[in-house]
Image (tube, rainbow, N blue to C red; front, side):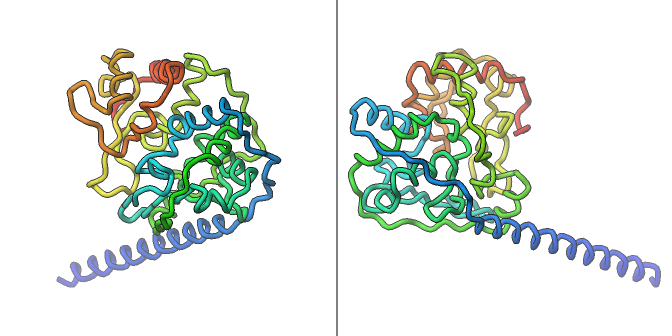
Length: 303
């Protein structure tokens, strides 16, 4: 009996020690996250002026509704007046703001909007939260001008912005490189990428599908999102593995991208931004497929 008490006492001390270490770790990571979010970046807004050229505005319209995936319930909303809240349990509650001329569209200059897209840096010089600028920062300057130009033409929407709250687990996951929430920290602001011409090739497709990595993982093999509640959709494997797209044809891929309906007839979860992907042009669709086909086959769940 005396031995049992000693064992329990030791175990209790071990549990307390582990809890203390974990508490210190969480405190340090949260502090690092908060400090990083307060950082003011020395990245000046570029000298950009929006264009009224119909071709430039049309290009911006296409990008906003396809590759950049700005318009949709999970982002800024179909009318860009603000998206629906995304509840991610202990990670965060996120709601993309109203970016029409009645709201942030009026608050930002053309150059500040361009910097936001390319660098994930807000008007005040600090990092934006959650907006996947790291996945579209490759867009050439002409495309960024096109996006800014299109945003200057959209109809104002008089809706207040929702609330975004990054919770403790979200802060830790960001610092551990498991989930990008402190966006500007994940972008190399001195780097300019030599993007290939828009062609139906795997080289260009690697840029087109960057937004997919946020959900499907850096290896595109899917699995539960880190820290997400069990009710949250689990991203699928989109590598050429047997648990992924091994038996798929381009026609199968295009169908699911355009309609949101899988080969087995099931609809994709609303987490998948079909509102954007269905608007890929033929070049973008073929390029995305070419890139995914060249990926190493990985079993489901490898993220």
